[in-house]
Image 1 (spheres, helix red, strand yellow):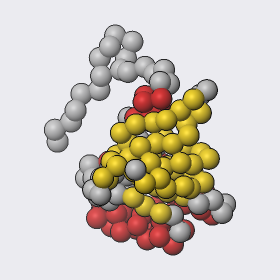
Image 2 (cartoon, one colour):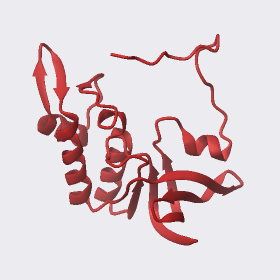
Image 3 (cartoon, one colour):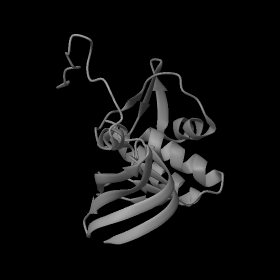
Length: 165
């Protein structure tokens, strides 16, 4: 199995993963960003959502807002297609490496420290070794694989229902 080496391996290229990759590159780290879908952006692009909620601000998010968003009736609306292109451009400009259509299949860890992750790609399985791993998957997949305790749902066990609109 081929092993790739990087400083920081970020798993999940949603908004958080993309921002982490861009910020790490700005600090000079070698970054490999791994995404299971064919585009970065997570649910903001692949889920075809189109509104920014909340009040998180950073220079990276401000750039995204300025270049992908229009304000209508107080709502920050964006085009998922525009966001896909913008994120690819921002990641490319920052110099981050992006591995698409790739998902985590396993984690090698000892003494609470991950040494490498195994990734299934269109070309087969590879390993990625890094000094730092960031789990930016929407479901905490890497943390679950390594055995980090987590809660799921509310105290009564119910989960948020799926929307169909």
